[in-house]
Image (cartoon, rainbow, N blue to C red; front, side, top):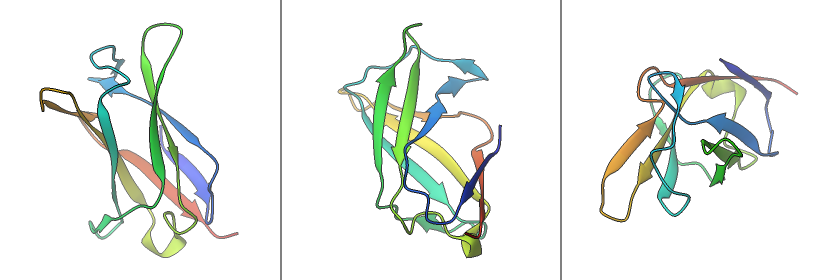
Length: 108
């Protein structure tokens, strides 16, 4: 589902981690996570926010992203967002594994 935000948003945003559209249980909260955020022109955004993996009661996982104040700007919208998780053995997974999450930003 597309996400819509106002420019300057810094409150945590929760993303469901899915493989083929299904919530996943295939990693640990100990995995290293990062957000791959691309602007509308495809440029990789070096975000200043933080990512936290959260285990849910149903043994599935969410990623909570707390953006920096300049991470989401109207002039770069819409963004595509994908999480990259790397386990202790160096194996990499991307969430979602299909079309990236779309984030549209509106002026204040």
